[in-house]
Length: 67
Image (tube, rainbow, N blue to C red):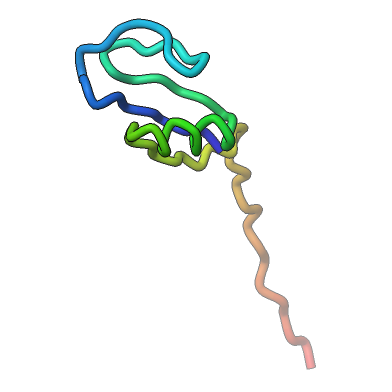
């Protein structure tokens, strides 16, 4: 899970809570850190990132009934 964290000041650039913010945005994969930032009043959005290619299903052939 990846988290996007937004500061109350959208122009903020610098370090807070061990994260580097650029224009009010920072990213982390650490849910504990995301909760900590949320408790400080930052906006935290969860992103579900699975990574890797999406497998393409193989075509199935219809079974013949020769009875």
